[in-house]
Amino acid sequence: MIPSSIEELNKIKKSCLKMVNKRATVSGVAGAIPVPGVDVSTDVAIMMELIPKINKKFGLSEEQIEVLDVESKKMVLVLATSIGSEMIGKYVTKQAITKLLKKIGLKKLATKSTVKYLPVAGQITSGSISFFALKSLGKSHIEDCYKICLNYINEKK
Image 1 (cartoon, rainbow, N blue to C red):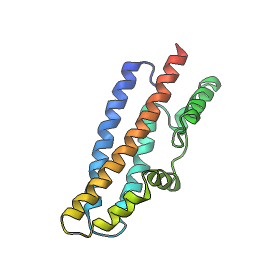
Image 2: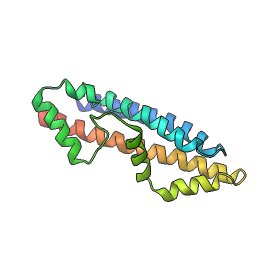
Image 3: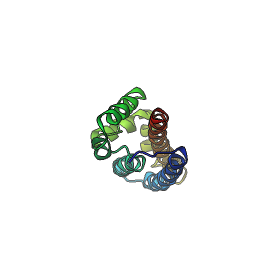
């Protein structure tokens, strides 16, 4: 269910930010492992789990939007489209996550893959890139969900 107050919305946002920080840490650790492909596959797996959880906490999962009345459903989908979100109210696929990861830039991913083989400093750099990339994507999705819910709350007043 979509939050009904700004206080409730802020609590959800705070909870989701904690969740993103934990998952970003896991991504950072995986990014430091000098084995080809482990970091990217870990990032995709984490995001495939994280995005639906964030959506659900905000009341914006596909199932939750489906049970809204027609007017509310239309409002939420228009708000999601207006901010350009492709992850709200939809089933999250591997292809969608990969597209989202590419948004952070192929240069960062290429740098991460290349430097991880340098002893110590390269692994730290690679892990840091993974951490900050996943954290950035997670925070961006939280902000999208927050904006949609905030606009929804304000429209319902």
